[in-house]
Amino acid sequence: METDRTLRERGICVVIPTYNNAGTIAEVVRRTMQQCRDVIVVDDGSTDATSGILARIAGITVVRCEKNRGKGHALKRGFRKALEMGFAYAITLDADGQHFPEDIPALLRANQEHPGALVVGQRMGLEKAERSAGSKFANAFSNFWFALQTGRLLKDTQTGFRLYPLRKLRGLCLLTSRYEAELELLVFSSWHGTEIVSTPVRVFYPKPAERVSHFRPLRDFARISLLNTVLCILAVGYGLPLAILRRLTAILRSAYVLLFFVCSMLVLAPAARLWLAFQKDKAKRQSGAHRLLWHYARFVILRHGIPGVPFSVGNSGGEDFARPAVIICNHQSHLDLMALLMLSPRIVCLTKDWVWHNPIYGFIIRQAEFYPVSLGAEALLPRLRSLVERGYSIAIYPEGTRSADCSVSRFHQGAFHLARALRLDILPMVLYGAGKAWPKQGGLLHRWPVRIEIDRRIGPDELQALGELPRQQASALRQYYKQRYAEIANRMEQDV
Image: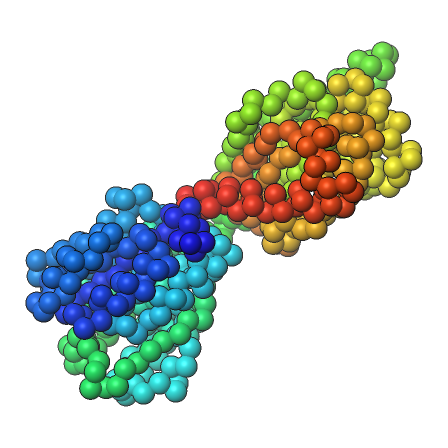
């Protein structure tokens, strides 16, 4: 089952808190397990037949509370159990049948589009549902206080159908024990900078006579009012300063990286130009330019580091770049070129005109024999053949431009024409995270891990088997990249 496999790859389980839901719990669990096999049910001290029903369901994990402590306590127990079992995310849904487990894929899609976010399942059609006046007021009341305490608008803060990033939950040890805990989790997550997104889900309300509710209007409204009073005070003394500090840190981090790059270029570029000018031997000058770029990229990426952006490299095949190849890589960010150049001094990139003519570092680029793609295939081919004969690999971004949303865009055919003309292997490299750390649209640097995976080579014969024509090969490799990128993302996004 595709949904279950993806949920497991991304470290997502389902947590169902229950208290005296003997009439619905079996059906809710059955439908949930059709979507996800990793189900944790927290029996919050049920006094009806719920415990016996759960004991007869195979394949689930049951956490039993000896006495009823409330939904907040049950969620806390469920989250801790999920963390013990190694999960990164937990989807919560109610045991009374109000939520549709069949909507779990909607929360999964939201998690893939917004990794690390707290996803809220916004119940659709609430205004038409037959609900009590107290239920309607409670949701509006909660929405108002959440907006006041966080400055964010959510249309459904009372929904129990959510996806939580377990390692980002804050205030868990202070969590209140009953209904108001779900609002508290939202507020603390917002204060600590966790992205909160909504996705539409369905909702079912049985007839009033058939509903099981443990809500105590006077007592629970009093508890919620007291909690909101405390949260409003904390919003001023805790939440707002945190938001200001987080924004300031992001600005300073981005300014530092920009300043470092500008200053290093202003110092190193003239010094490198002077050093290269004294190299009379052309081959030594070209080799020196390559090693200079390699050392600089390694210094920036591996030694100096970019604050909040850890880099890692996967090279399971032990690629050593001893044999030339056409390197292809997906394109997301300004960080991509550094990530490639740090791997070997024997990599040459095809560039855009503005890079080749740059007044600061263009001289080094030209000395390293990086050529602009605007020269055209006829002019480029003999120059690239000369580089290949000297042991250099040619790196090309087949997408042509950076992807705005990190998805793998359509591949152009140039890299495959070149591999055919030079009888070279294709060496795929899959880059993850650069576009999230430094997006194409958006000036600030974000805290995000970046990883580059060096995959096994694809020889000319194997490439030919993917399709006779370069466009067929480009299409096949794009599908390969989409699958590999999803695999890497599923693994990496458990820790963001």
